[in-house]
Length: 540
Image (cartoon, rainbow, N blue to C red):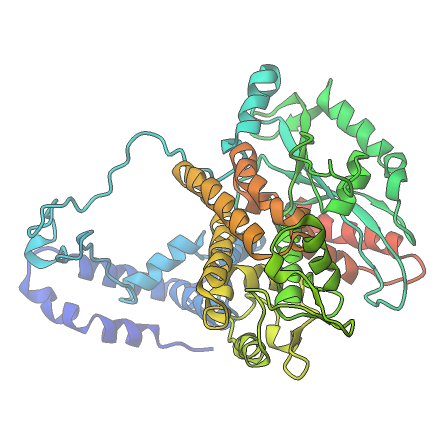
């Protein structure tokens, strides 16, 4: 492979070469030119004729672009090559490689602008501190330490734990864990009834952008199928509980590579994350009676927004589209109104022939409105990997939406109500549903400002009251009231995107892919997990 690097450099710095003889000293462009010229002549390693140091760096960037490698993946690739071939003259990181490309002229310029869009800080105003039009400073002012919530450490539960156990919290190396468990069918087919229950631990000592990545989740144990452990799950959890007790006190002697000393590491289980069925098994508390709410009973369990959104989405779509078996607007719900002596205009009316007629509710849709509602979801174009193909779940002939996943419900609740319901419902109904979608989108933010929590708490109270006035009592099950507690959950545990089931559901898909021996699915998962865990563990 022969690259005309010298020709590339001379074409790029043609003006610099022409001016070298007319100026004293070397300008910055000339310094970059000679540095690149030197790199272009330097062999990648002794005896290499195909690549120079510069040409190999350019080819690496081409490889990154063609295969869409992230900056982190590219840096890891450079580190791996450097460790395998320490004598090779290659950049040590992505930033150093990018500086080489910038020296070739492939760069961009950042231009500051006035916060009020009055002017650009360029030319004569390039070094100005304030806008020449309105006088506003070009710099952001930071008043004290940020109080925004970005991590569970910003929550009140973490801080209360520190006050209760100062001996534990004074050593930042002590680990704080979350526990999650959920059942799944390991055979990828619904024709076989099989429920495998992995139990996973999450390490919340890590940064918020990596603590829930699949490679940092710890598969602590697998409860085998074919049936769910139900109330006997405490029997299977005994080995894990023993290990957690040992980690809590006295701890385990561990080697610290940074200080080159051993120390006694401890761990604490902060909370559990699971859906409602798993909560009933893990806590032993009934989730089907009037005292089912874990917030009311002060259980150390996180309400899962994923299942809350999914259940609310099912209830709304089933009722609004009058899907058989999923609608809460039926004859029995109207008789409930009659028994409760409320909303007389919606109560069933029986004529002299025994025929029963029902008045339309404020949220009822005609066939044309249902068709318009479904057509919006049918024709929606979504960014790649943002959600599954929702249009495949919309059945225009029957005017139904069926078979969507939890992540689809998450996307529908956050973004589609503003589009789909605006023209098919009265203003009071559409505005309430839009406000509910905005509420879910706000609480799922990665950064939460404390002043927004009070507004959200008041907002969800008003939304719930409006839902009570519009829909029938049968519509308002426990899931419709759980969002009221989500704001307080953020105050206690920090952002909810670090305490929901979406990442666990994704990890279950990976575990399903490890099943090679269908006669022993759990053993197959355990063996495959160790094979994947070994290189990850050794590379960090």
